[in-house]
Image (tube, rainbow, N blue to C red; front, side, top):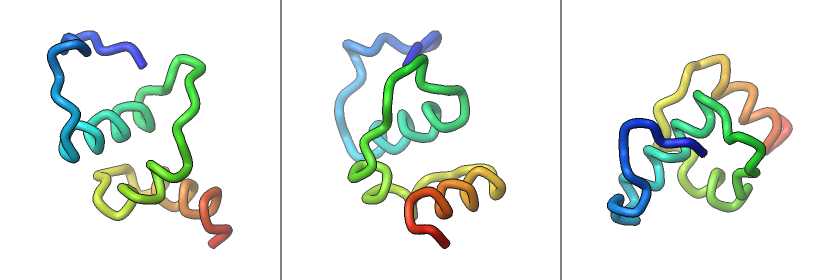
Length: 64
């Protein structure tokens, strides 16, 4: 993931920043990196996503 407005080395790994990074990876792409399914499932209810992307991810994760 390419961070153009923050230095990745100075960001602390908190729950808030993990969710923020997941949201950005989903919205802007991952540059070929994969998102770990367990991490996405754990934080999914708390992510602020576009409704269409949320429904698509639900389908991929849980076949709903």
